[in-house]
Image (cartoon, rainbow, N blue to C red; front, side, top):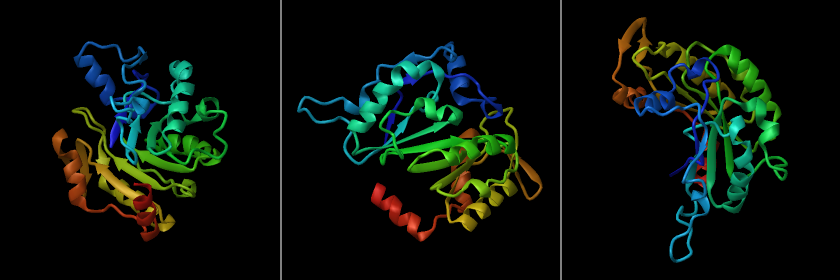
Amino acid sequence: MAMWNPWRGCHKYSEGCKHCYIHKGDARKLIDTNVITKTDDFYAPVAKNRNGEYKIKSGQKVYLCFSSDFFIDEADQWRDECWKMIAERSDLNFIFLTKRIDRFQECIPEDWDNGYDNVTVGCTVENQAMADHRLQLFASFPIKHRNVICQPLIEEIFIDNYLDGVEAVIVGGESDKYARPLNYDWVLSLREQCMAKRVRFEFRQCGTRFIKDGKEYLLNVRDLCSQARKANINWQPTSCRVDLELRE
């Protein structure tokens, strides 16, 4: 696994951004997150060592632009060059998330056609309004590998009508002392929707405020992911396991 942040900085875009970890971390460092800047790691996928070998080894997953949004407007001037590097490194699997799926057609390269084999696009939704708006668009675009990211999930949502062609749904709560609560029933509902459509489901993290069986718990941030794993509710169909092994 590798991380590639060709630029950093972002703007709060919808309700799910209220307690954004990037903005919080930058505030502690007195950094203005709203300033979008190109990073020193811009050419990381094609960087080579002294032997002329790529530093990022073949076959890895590369998490792209997790300190920003890959479709943010201010990065329009740099994105084409990123696509060229992604095309060059067809031996890597690139994954990025976006709340700006409405900009998809403006941001894809000329040779996108039906999508790149080595790119997975994750569309982030946090409530029913955003699910209905973004996922309807998401389903209409030519993308070979697509995930739906329900994190932070701030209300119960129904997305079963948008799951055709989706490979995975990732669910998680909000991490903040002022976090909005995550109800475990909402998580289980999404799991049932995924199972009915035979889509891989992953419960990534609990919320700081977590409701289960009608009782609200206040959890430490460091325990959110481990508590989600303890729930042991991740699910994937057999065919999905085989596909994942081949891609990895």
